[in-house]
Amino acid sequence: MRPALRWPTRTRALGLVSDLSLNVFLAMSLMSMQLWTLGGLGPALIVALGAQTLAAVLYMLFVVFPAMGRTYDAAVIAAGFSGISLGATPTAIANMTAVTKTHGPAPVPFIILLIVIVAIAVGIYFYI
Image (cartoon, rainbow, N blue to C red):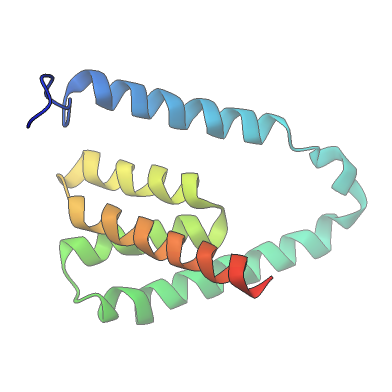
């Protein structure tokens, strides 16, 4: 028995809804940050963010990209890793979406990213 309606995959409408949802989420999360409360931590925060960014970029270049096979899918996964290491899951998806909009589709990295994130979440849930 098959459903009467076909699932709307890879349609412009679904792409628009997913992009809009992601953008609204990112805007709401950025607007809710109270950055003025960090006023006195300026220099220390800049040093910490710089060190984290440098470590993440080096790890992406020398570990993630080569371990994934130095292909286009590996580059998309590295873009997703940059979002995870410097932000959160929506940032990773936004980074991967930006790369795939510019250079072409890559469905496998999105699946890999979501599986890894679910595995991490389940591990954290059972650890706590």
